[in-house]
Image (cartoon, rainbow, N blue to C red; front, side, top):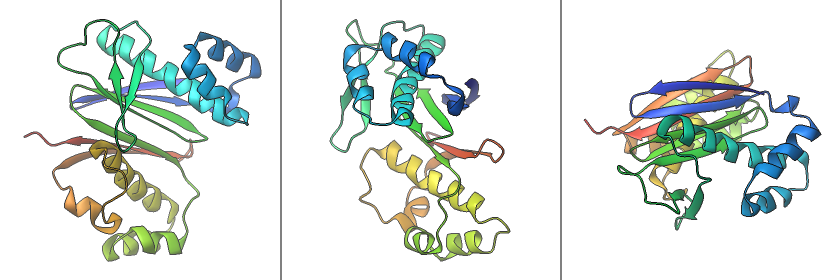
Length: 209
């Protein structure tokens, strides 16, 4: 597994690639290092892939908090009304508050940390279906996807952008997905297309300027 770290305005991104190289022994070691509640959550997954994503996403967050903010305690989460987690600390909460978001797929785990609200989505390419694109994209976006030489790339890019906004707002999917990018035009989007590694990620933060 390889971890890449990059910075964008207002946020730091951590990405773990090569999940398929994790051995059963490495997974067992990772599970043993988790707090009990997270270990139990990971073990609830029937298949190894789910356990890997659950365990290593938490460990990636721990690394991000340690390297970006010097926080060494294992974080606890409080889940909001629509499922967006926020950090809880047993010691004094840092000021300004730290925001984070996690996402994972079969090919990558992504974590973003920031001092302002943030959302991230990472998706493996290969989900493109014309019927699905018609449902979630407006006419302009649909045309961009269907006229592309490789529809998977713009489909996944636009999908992650919409998902990242949903995760930023913490409202759940209660908006018109077709008009989501137009409605939230005050959001800054940072998208990375890693075609060789088979994933696309997008980070969404509020434009505070």
